[in-house]
Image (cartoon, rainbow, N blue to C red; front, side, top):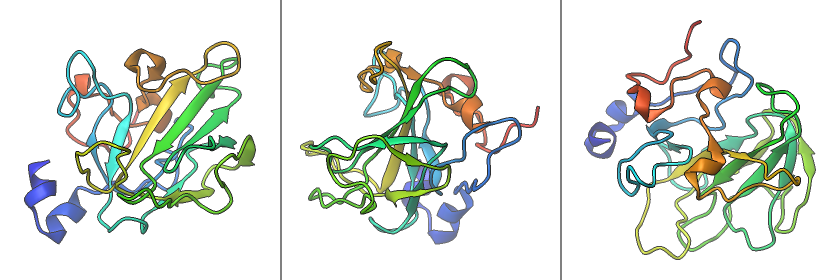
Length: 202
């Protein structure tokens, strides 16, 4: 984080991961370009060992509303009527655990005032709109809800478990999420102390 926060443009660019195609033997594409600065199970602030990070945060080189966010996989997009900055995508058949349903959560796609950067195809109240992998969903932002703490421009991306009744579980509970590492073909779990976030070659 120190290099990202205090470095110059070239320092930051060197930390950026771009993965427009899926890594070998992995089903998902990285949903946006940027520095993967907070990892899955990350205890660093604002998280903790008791309440670790539920997904990955991909920080943008650009100002809010510039860096595109793409669908990581085929699935059905929902935007709840009160959501300003987030979408959730139902994947009926988990590509790594066939027969299970999972949900992909994309957040912070708005500016600090809550002006949405979500693509016009997904107005508030959208339910079950099918998209293919790579479809444009919106643009990264720095919206943090009602929290006073300001955040850098980024996308929060997580994989959420199904509740068994066809709905997504509470994403804020770490136990309701899945490690994105095998889905993206990268080492993204903080517990594994990754040095880089490149594709893992099996």
